[in-house]
Length: 255
Image (cartoon, rainbow, N blue to C red; front, side):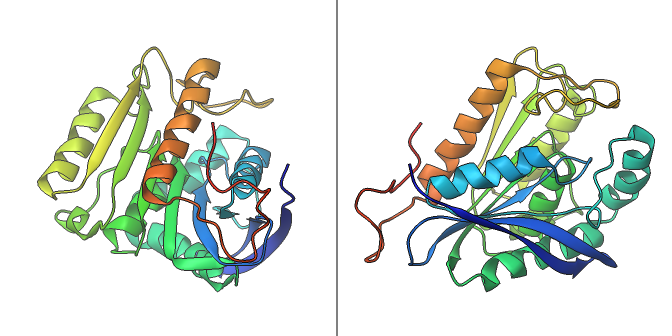
């Protein structure tokens, strides 16, 4: 088992002091890095565990914050914060760029090998980073088939993988079609996986607070979606061994 280290990082964005979770792999050399965006509720233990899991596989991982250190378990508060944010690409890009700067400032990060993985609102932020022309090797987004300003998807410089539940009422078929039409018209290398019978946020374990309608956990598809994310990273952002790396440690995602 590899040994990872974690720490909390604070940084400004969207007029707030954001509090992210940084996970570092064992070893000493530069490694590929992954930015992880949370669902609309904000950064919680689920995203922290995902960052830790990626660090165990050899990635530098930063789970970024959306709400200035708050977790919005009340649906009304979450929607009041997220709906204006989702309608404002510039604000989403500000949040994403600020987190990306923190990730790139970490000495263990290879800034030329970075991916963004986002869920819900965090997935929309990842897509806006791509539309803003960020130097990313891959973008993975779940439950966030958002469309951008006309023509800006042409700025995406990497493959895009998107996942959605077939029964997701928030990302309905019309939204899927608009998203895929935008990606196709822009010439993006894109893929869409539809998970049969799954609702919105199917990847997220059950929570002990109210949620918006249409949310539901699907354990099998949650595992499959995680494997799909790892497959994308293996393809586009493989972990390679550095000279100081212990030969007994993992050198790539194994699942």
